[in-house]
Image (cartoon, rainbow, N blue to C red; front, side, top):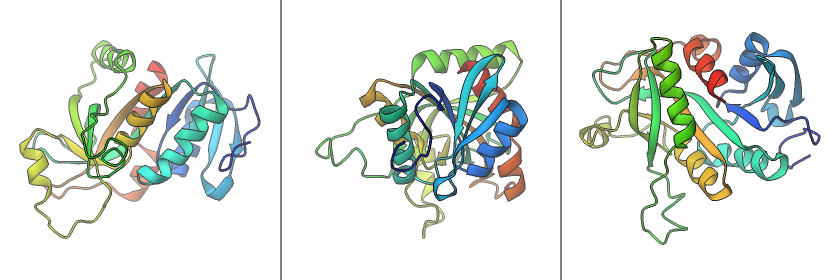
Length: 232
């Protein structure tokens, strides 16, 4: 057992899907995994292991934001030997051509967090996805005629910003969307030698004001989940 996960050794698979919402983790396990069981309920951050197409897969909620996610990512890798992590999360569009329910593959993750500024002495480390997982995701999308966008995303520390036009700076440099965890995931995966990828579904738009309901965020986004399960 680790400090924040109640799993016994061997209960967590070496491949993990990482949604922020623990209830999305529960939905994924109940909908897609065979013979799944809950290995942790600590702080309500649910984790499950089961099989998908005969392969063991775990699904672990991570909470919102880099600090919360890093706790679980660190323990998954260090204490349970996890080798692959695919984040399945939601994001807010920064570009007019990105609409609700569109898929984004995060090739790289910029961030407003100081997670890398401090250890790199104010120099810039560029956290990127694992190429093997990224290539598999692209191949799966093309083979199944699934449209997607790939590029840079922003991992924000603040969900609510006082300046409603702040996103335009990032948008001008081609950043596709904002979320809150990928830069942390890519950074620690690089440090620990694990493979990581973020697959995101657009749930709202800074440009148009569109947004999904909280029920849709919790229990939907099937394309993203199926892609993650089939590449991991």
